[in-house]
Amino acid sequence: MDGILTDSLIKSALFLARLGINYRVGIIDQNLGNENEMNIKDIRQLMAVLKDEYFQVDNHCIINPTFGDGSQLVQGADGDLIIDDTLIDIKVTKNLAVERIHLNQTIGYYIFSLIGGVNDDKDFKPIKNIGLYFARHGVLWKISLSVLADEKTILEFKDWFIDYADKKLWGGRLEEIKKRYNEKEVEGKTKKPEKKSKKIDKQ
Image 1 (cartoon, rainbow, N blue to C red):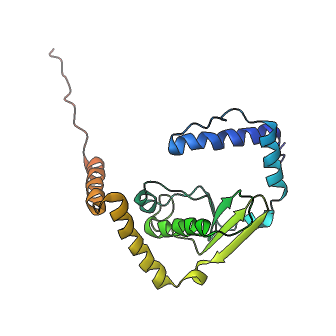
Image 2 (image 1 turned 45 degrees about the vertical axis):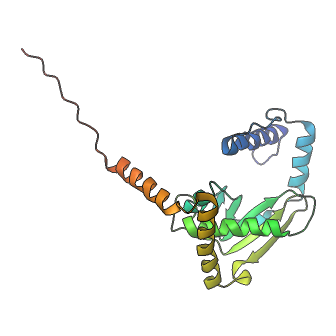
């Protein structure tokens, strides 16, 4: 029935989650296809403490958003969830604490969105808040980005980060690589298919 969290549905969700690891990083989870009763019980406990009001959607909900050039800058990155103007990172940690590493990660996703937008839309930059959802506790921590820094400081940090990633990951050749990639992309779009000559049999 619709709306019923069955064991079969939980097993399917766990299977897809483990399969997703293989798709994203090329690693096969040893437990793929071996979803057991302990796994099902764990998911049910997470669902039992979840509050619906944390995940109400007014305009849009984006699952596993990517950030275009921002993601490519660090050789691949995607977030957990964007609901309207809030980027939410889901943590299944036992500790109910906002740790610096978690904050840095979520702010990083926001910076990526400023660089490349969200998914395939470079101009779509909806994020105004970031949040951490502690799934084992049913708690959502949320903060406005304007509290962390003003717009000028954020944009300056974005520019600094691009330069930093260029030097650390691309050896200072980012612009050259992007230019070469863009030229190939344009060439692929503008190249006309060769016309095949039509054979005409003599009568």
